[in-house]
Amino acid sequence: MIKTLLLSSLYPSAVRPIHGIFVETRLRELLKTGEMQTKVVAPVPWFPLKGKRYGEYGLFAATPKFEHRNGVDVYHPRYFLPPKVGMNIAPYTMAMAALPVARKLMRDGFDFDLIDAHYYYPDGVAAGILARKLGKAFVVTARGTDLNLIPEYAYPRKLILATAQQAGASIGVCKALMDSLQALGADPAKLHTLRNGVDLERFVPEPRAAARQKLGLPLNHKLLLSVGHLIERKGHYVAIDALPLLPADVRLLIAGGGSERAALQKQAEKLGVANRVQFVGVVPQTDLKWWYSAADALTLCSSREGWANVLLEAMACGTPVIATNIWGTPEVVSTPNAGVLMSARSGQGLADAWNALAAHYPTRADTRAHAETFSWESTTKGQLELFRCLLRPKKAV
Image (cartoon, rainbow, N blue to C red; front, side, top):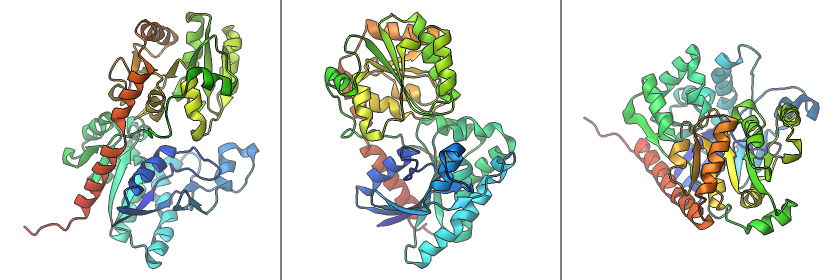
């Protein structure tokens, strides 16, 4: 039985139930094998005041110090993240917050074999600090922005490379991320690609008409769905820009919450398409299948993505996708049955992709079949094999 300590600030909690749910999903699939035990340390930034008026910081304060979530013990120690200098000191303050929890777990009998860190910076770097202090092996999984944006900053880049050299292995959820880490100077022998899978039992096709009736959506329009936080990087504004270029019967559904909602509403009004845009708010993971099934296509207009789970979730529900041609996305949208990659991240690029998809629209069965090639089985097997390899006693030379 392998015992791991999962360290990541990207992990759901009672107050942020969909935050980092992809990390919890991968862990859940590992635990299903019965070959691993895990406890989770998911640090959150310290903030003194709870309440909606403080936005995300209020949620940090409201996060419980401990919770038993879906059968797993999850600890949420607080770490100091001051303005301006926070980015450079975060790995150290995160490690210092997690260290007492890790030591107590060891004293109480959970002497874990290795640290399984998710997100390279600051989480992976913090895991390296913990590993040195506790004498443990560790691995780091890169997920997107941690390697396609943060290394642009000199000091974090230095720490990321040092961590990659120290780690037993680095895992990328797409090959593009491991190519990026190798380009920084990491040892290619330590780099592994273990892509995210999709939960084929949770995400299943529902009859489109039934899904629309359940959600109160029109039956006589084409529906384009955009899912993700309402932030610039996700590119919901690109989808709104495309609406004037799309047929008049196309409606845009935007699922998610965030700081850009007012700006997006204003943009839709300025373009004269406000009556064609519906903001549906944050959708629980368990309800997403109905929105995917109701849509004619999902669009993902992100400027940066490692491996976008929403693409596979939509496909598993039989809905093809339109996405920007970035990072790991071409590894997902790899056949016409999956959907179409945009030629440019623009309203025109999305409109052109919509027309291309409509001209050769796949059957729902074919789109679902493509998603079925991304089950969790191979990733789970690969991760267990990697952990065993790292923990195997080294032969004397």
